[in-house]
Image 1: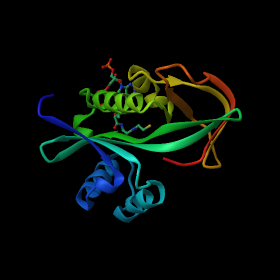
Image 2: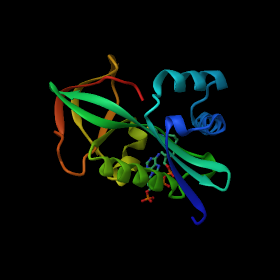
Image 3: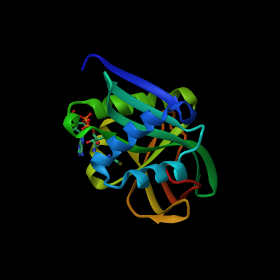
Image 4: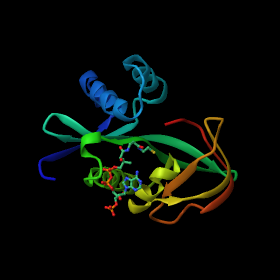
Length: 174
Ligand SMILES: CC(C)(COP(=O)(O)OP(=O)(O)OC[C@H]1O[C@@H](n2cnc3c(N)ncnc32)[C@H](O)[C@@H]1OP(=O)(O)O)[C@@H](O)C(=O)NCCC(=O)NCCS
């Protein structure tokens, strides 16, 4: 596990080469054309969003983004970090790098004084629970006005959020 380098970048610090590396890594798990990956990035990532990257020499092994998101939970609005595009290079999966990536994100969120929110499917629930995240029991959720029917998880080290809600809505996709 030695010689790993962890970078925290704001979008406007990313070079085009790094964005290409991110899109290539994402493409190992979510197949789209190069142009589609780039369009998703342009449509959904803002200049002040954050990116966590783990490198071994010049190879990008893991990535996630943290975006500023407003989550309205039963009529109360919380400013949070939305975590998205969590991925580890296929060759390096199940070697602990995902946990290092999430610990880095958790530390960043904690330092910021905010809470974290992520969307996931059943197959990654256990992984996120291992990383200190908890599932919220929510009746209806909407991500940027689109119905979302899978799981929503929070990272809430200071226990400021409810653990169940009738409605959760975010102002952005991530
Ligand atoms: C999910 C992902 C990020 C996990 O990264 P990883 O480096 O393989 O995870 P780690 O090796 O750090 O595993 C940490 C723990 O979570 C568990 N875990 C990891 N992936 C899991 C999965 N898919 N389902 C259940 N548990 C999982 C492991 O058992 C491990 O626990 P252990 O140490 O007690 O055995 C990685 O598998 C990945 O990139 N998946 C494809 C993209 C994806 O689905 N991303 C999530 C989008 S919501």
